[in-house]
Amino acid sequence: MTTELRRLRNYIDGEFRDAADGRTIEVVNPATGQAYATSPLSGQDDVDAAMAAAAAAFPAWRDTTPAERQKVLLKIADAFEERAEELIAAESENTGKPIELTRTEEVPPMVDQIRFFAGAARLLEGRSAGEYMEGMTSIVRREPVGVCAQVAPWNYPMMMAVWKFAPALAAGNTVVLKPSDTTPASTVLIAEIIGAIVPKGVFNVICGDRDTGRAMVEHKTPAMASITGSVRAGMQVAESASKDVKRVHLELGGKAPVVVFEDADIAKAVEDIAVAGYFNAGQDCTAATRVLVHESIHDDFVTALAKAASDTKTGQPDDADVLFGPLNNANQLKQVSGFIDRLPAHAKVEAGGHRVGEQGYFYAPTVVSGLKQDDEIIQNEVFGPVITVQSFTDEAQALEYANGVEYALASSVWTKDHARAMRMSKNLDFGCVWINTHIPLVAEMPHGGFKKSGYGKDLSAYGFEDYTRIKHVMTSIEG
Image (tube, rainbow, N blue to C red; front, side, top):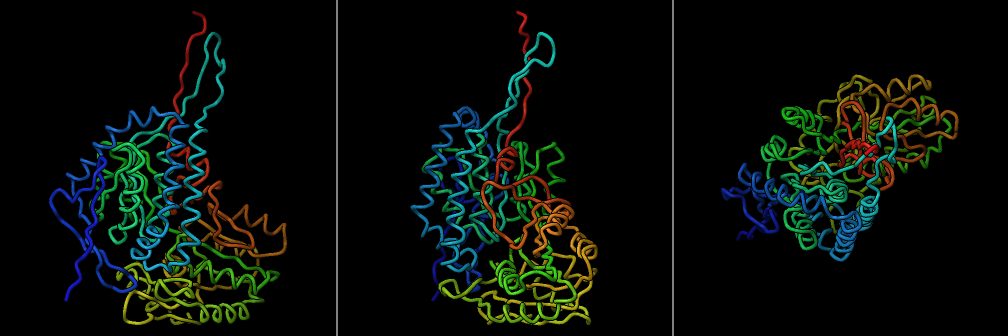
């Protein structure tokens, strides 16, 4: 007996549609490894239709007042709250995430972020008018950029959709958003929610694979392409967008150093780092996965972290006791397993290091010690529930190791020495530095990296400004 798969559809110009050529792909629940839906495999005709709808809707949406856009975003936030249980169910089926943690740790921040950008909509300010040349007054206008092509990842499908559409709509842009091919369900539901509130064409969702995303970025209509994804994907987007000089917003990979000095509160550091490393199965660009510990406390720290890993539970979404669910897909399970299988002889697996069960894509919380700076697992993003531990001798070596990777998104420092914390926060080459904590985010503060972690900011007024352009207007005041 076979179960009929649910049919997901694109949302274009105010209506749900199948792919123009009828192609679909199966969507798999990573907690079971079984398909539960089909999703459109959108092609060029679908991309053309979505872009045309967004372009047609742009002039009227651009010309709405900031107050009108604020009201719309506040309605969206209210609707997210009202339909929270539907969103949670869709996201859990998408990703296998624990239902209770999705309810408490994702939905409230998402709603808050939408409301933040609703407020930001009314702060589209330029510099004050002034006379910088005799007889001339200059004015700076801040305007929306136009149609935005946005590609969201599979690790936080709902939240990353919010990070993209909320500032774009608040600034007066129209949107064509593509979810990952493995996690389209919650984004299609978001389209249903938003579609009932905004004018048709303002918000569009097309589902598909990498070729769909490539067609969006290469399309002539969008003025901006925004992607959260891998470094490789970001480089491809930047290259494609360069052909017609599109604005690009990239939030790519991470390899966050977690620097623990000898005076840190070891028990608190271990507890917080385990949560920040294993939450969402470590599938987070800011995850606390690369720990650097002073040599004097290294052995005790590793023992305590291995115990914390062994006490951390993974399992099915309806189990309220689990910290994280499965890896997102079979390829990701293979990638994480491959890093452990290829460990050098000098490395030691202190905890975990294996798949959990045969159903779904679960992987045990893992700790690996004895590593060297040039080891593959230190230099490359694992994106799984794997925490590595290295030792350092002094502050200079800690900085050398911390900065000695190609990623530069997030980092943290654990010490009671205020001066040292300030020195480290100054010299760590990362877009975010936490002190005696790791991973909290707030809507008011920017999130984004340097180096191969990309450029542009999410959240905050800086993220809002990324979706605007600056125009200088000069007028003669002498008649």
